Length: 246
Image 1 (tube, helix red, strand yellow):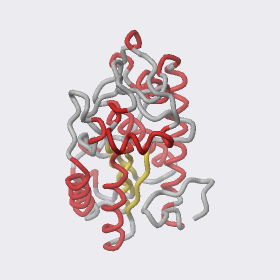
Image 2 (tube, helix red, strand yellow; image 1 turned 45 degrees about the vertical axis):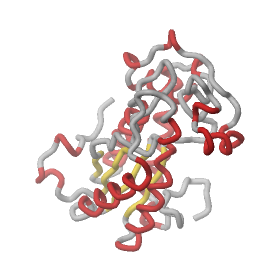
Image 3 (cartoon, helix red, strand yellow; image 1 turned 120 degrees about the vertical axis):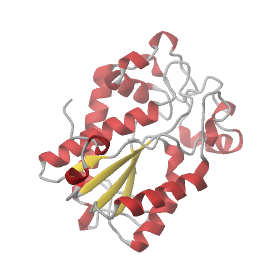
Image 4 (cartoon, helix red, strand yellow; image 1 turned 90 degrees about the vertical axis):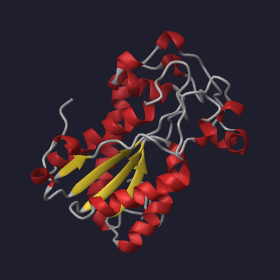
């Protein structure tokens, strides 16, 4: 898919006049026996590329920054390969990153592929909004997506980087709705509820499903960004979804 040039590939002069900077946030954490540790980063980057392209098509000068690969992944530290910098460090990184980038970018949107980054994003954006309001965050989660390394993430990886997916190793994990697992997750992490690290069932995943999911995510976020200056950010700093009251 064609996408807008990423920030790291352009010159300083080309960055001048940037109206929207999209910052993908990912993680280095286990994603079951079949997906790479970089799954969240790959998804967030692909989504930001697509959003930037959609915004440019709408006449907005938008670009995607390099992905911030390390996130707050303490709930996955029961599995080897996971590297977490924790919420406090992530919050500080986000504050300093945005303070620097907003010198030349009008609006900045943090787009996280990992749910564990949300707490740090909320705290960072609360502070940053008091300094200047042109900042918001969102995630790559959608209603109907399973929670972790299941059908949704596996399908999107098949669309983005099929060479990284080992479907021959895919197996169902805990398919209980994540909302019912939070008490156990908070106490013992993912390993306490899913010994294989999967919250969902990846075995039905397909690249066409992943492409539809990625397109829907990009369309939703692009629409939200276009409404950002018209009350499209809630009191947590999150972009308001089209069906939500502002």
